Image 1: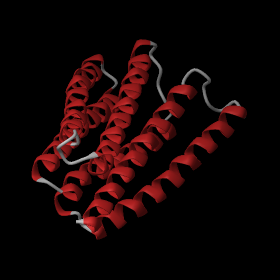
Image 2: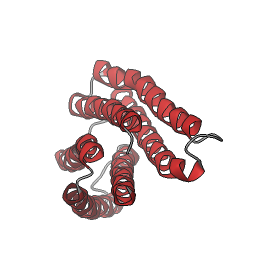
Image 3: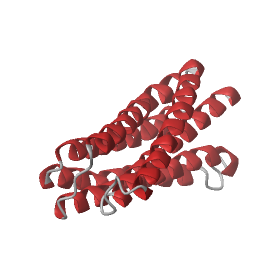
Image 4: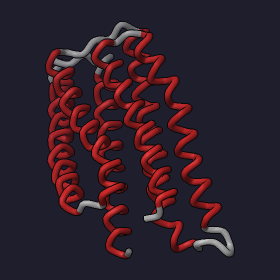
Length: 204
């Protein structure tokens, strides 16, 4: 992987890590200030993601690297875009929680925290993955993703069962499920980026 592409991939990673950290802080504190800080960073994420895609497209133009060279990088840019959309959705849900004074049960808070922490760990591992192309790290990411998605699906199913039984509050339920789904999206796209990096390293 060329250095200039690598640097742009890492820059997108860092801005998305920053945004997810602020969203995590927003979830823990549920203050308007913390959520606004996360919302402010979304412009940085959009800018870095758009810059990556623009750079790759320019390099793949006629006389440049070509379309086949660009495909995996554009795929990664798309994955980063989707992570950003998931994060923006989370900011919207946290804003609703603060505005409407909605609180989760201790159990729901713990479950969301569990998924959040793994999503953070996985996203934070991507810059190292991009730099080292370490296949063992990629394997570890894959194992973590499969494990946490299974746990997250279990949390969602158990929550829906509690909702049917009248244990969960209908007002907070869509917000809880939406946060879990967004985190699953971030985790899945992290795996996709990791897979593309490994694939590229095998070709080089």
